[in-house]
Image (cartoon, rainbow, N blue to C red):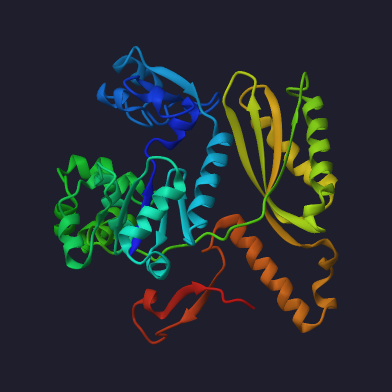
Length: 394
C-alpha cells in the first residue's frame, strides 16, 4: 500500500506564518517581479470568490477586490518542507517528494514496526506535528485521491477492486496534481468529462490519439494504475548565509557571494568533496524570498569557477536582497579523484563513468541516462524493435 501525505496550501501557510491567518481571509501568493503576473496558492475565502491558483492578477483582483497578496518565500518553504520530509523519514519511511506539501511512502515495509496500516499512518501524523490529510491506496494516484477526500483525522484506506470502483466517481480535476496531465483539464472540461469513470470509458486509444502520451497516462491513472514510487535519497546538506547590508545588488553583492563560496568550501564537513548541485537563495528587503537551484556541468571545488557560475544567477534576483545564502544540495567525489579518464585503470574508469551518469541524472532527472535495447529487431513496427531502458551501473 502507498500512503499519501497532503498538507493543503503549504506555501501559503508558510508565507502567512501559520494556518490561523487563513481563516476567513482572502489571501493569495503574489506573483514575482519580472515574471508572468499570475497569483500562486490562494486561501479558501479567495476560492469562494472565484480566485484560482495560476489566475491572472488583474482577473483575480477583479473577482475579489479585497484580495490580500502575500510575498512568496520559497526559501522558508524549502526549509519547512525539508523538515517535514525529515520527520517522515524518522519513522522509517522511504519518501517520494512530489512537491512541497505532497509526499508518498510505502507502508508495507513499516508494518513490522507499527503493526497495521492505521498505526503506520498514525505514526506519520504524530511525526509531522501539523494537520495533514493522509490517505492510502494500491498506487500513488489512488492514495492521492483518498487523501484529498479526507475531511477528518481518520484516514481513508482503499484496497483492491474497491479502490478502482471508488476512483471512478472522483472528479477529473485530480489530474491537475500531475504535471504530465495538468494541461488536459481544460479540454476535458470543454468536452463535458467530469469524472475519472467517464474519462476511462472514452478508451485509451481515443485519448492517446487526441492528446498523445498525456492522454494515455490519464487513462492509465483513471483505471487506478500508476508507476512505482521514486524514493528520494537523503543527502547531507551544508548551508552558509550572510547579511549583505548595503550590498543588496550589483558588484558589491557579487563580492558577498565570493565570501560565501569561500566559507562553504572551508567547512570541515565538506571533507574534500566537490560540489555537484548548490542552491543560491536570498531574503528580499521588501519581504519574501528567492531561490535558484544550480547544477554545475561537472563537480567543482575551484572557488573561482563556482563563483563565476553563480554570479550569473544574481541577475535573476527580482528585488534587492537583505540576506544571501548558499547551500550544497548534492556532493560529488573528492577533488583528488579528478584526472584523465584514459590514464586510469579499468576500475577507476568504471567509477568515473558512474560519476558521469550521476551528474547527468542530477541535471536532467533519473530518465536522462538511457540506453537502446533491441527487443524485436524483425518487427514491422519501428517502436517495437528498440526500447529505451535505464543505463545500469557501470
